[in-house]
Image (cartoon, rainbow, N blue to C red; front, side, top):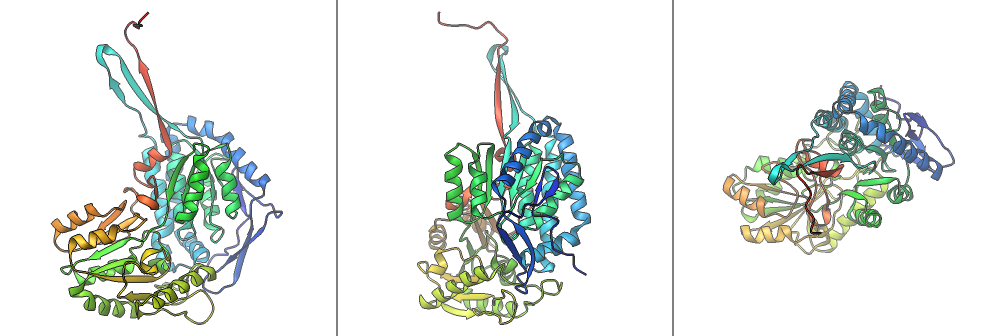
Length: 486
């Protein structure tokens, strides 16, 4: 039997579950059935205050531990998370509607990878010695920022809670994490596991809420850093509010990423990459390569093989491990996607596959392909965040690079070709922060993840994330007499 998704309480503060029913109720709707499976309450000002005070009061003692000691807690949490992968994966499926076939291998496992990686890195966070003439020298030390706020998105709630929490805690910060109101369940389990692993009370806290709670956390003077995963419009608001108080930020935002498939590409691999970049997680991935530029010489073969592969998608109950394509996260998100499908038809794109609601309970929609898409069409310009692929024709390398870069976004990009010189040349010219050659959408914790241009600021994962959750202090040491002009 799958787990009971009902949480112990709405919030997790100072090492324990906390309830306050005075907050606005938030219903948790299971995407596969439309049924209400749980309810949490939005954080009241009192809850927000309590969480921030807990994080502030715990931070100095947590930072005073050695990095090795902090890392030990994170690595223990990773072990617990892996031992409970089944339970956490089922909860992720209840939270998001993503098929268990995905969540068993991607979500809690990715979160555990982050805890393990940054747990291992924590003891290695040192400064450097910089010699100067005459025996003087400078040394640097890496200092935590203080209280960090994490604002999560609804597509990867377990993963995002650790992508933000693990580097923050490794550096000696404490965190208040607000999950998306659409997926409020998973982060609570992450907080619970961290406590079980030995994190002192107040080190990692979770509060629920809508945008007003996020705004209150972002602008609170106790907060030193805000990290958001979300849309570009939301990111601009949060970035602006944080900048007004000179807070540190990481903005991991949306995209409209190009996936370029040359005529010499291995067709089967290219189709697989396009599936991963458009239909995995029912298309609800920020880095998706939703502008698929296909060389005219192989366009017909690509569309034919893509349709054959999509015919093999198993659409159904996400709790059935045979299911490979689940529902949209919410009815509202499905309506947004359907609106874009109508726009595609109205603006003259060719509907080559799918495009319709799947009747019955839940937020199901067919995987959808548009062919003959032009660069100025809405479905080629705006992030849809659903299972809609736009296929665009091209013939020349310089032409497709220019078109690929003609966007406000710059999160990801990919190229499929068997000419490795061209592969490296083209990917170097694509203005995006996270790129792929002959694959798509892999995100190992050891590699930095993030965007250029409108797609964000800063990087998550890898050693780069350490720079986002700490700052460097330089100390000049004089070994000689001090000279002055008078």
